[in-house]
Image (tube, rainbow, N blue to C red; front, side):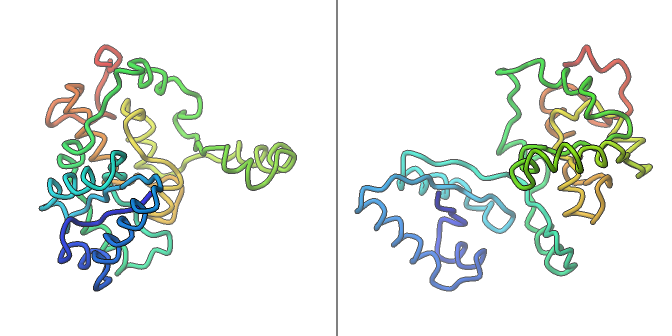
Length: 225
């Protein structure tokens, strides 16, 4: 997979901060095609290349039959460097643009969001983490005897999380999780405002929420799913 950050030398080199980078990546594509190697072009959407997104799509299609769009949102750095994270935040697309780029589609599993609401991992104050990476890193014995007993005692304490995220019916759309909360705020249960706004934009696109409604304030939400 080869990332593409722009369709022109000016944009690509500006985004990557690597003068000559566009010429180098295009030469790399040429070498891959010359060698008959298979590859996927991944387009990286952000504020400073959004103006030529159409051209980026055309370029990707001309380079390979296989291309994809990377995550239409950007995560902050877990180093919590203010200057670096301010720059990342500036490059984020607004929620409506994210929906335009990555329209939500639940046709393959229309009940997924309903199931998400009743999943015990998303209780009012429980914190849920993916366990597969953990098992891969620590091993099954440690996970069962050391980690899980301690982890089951963890509870969310952030009042904003408890009053909003824990009550919201959009968990199946929202990307909020402890890892992203940690990258954004350095805590496990502080809501990530940007991800919340994206989830609400997706819900409005699907017709589940009115323009001024919030997922955590909506009663009897089941009929909307």
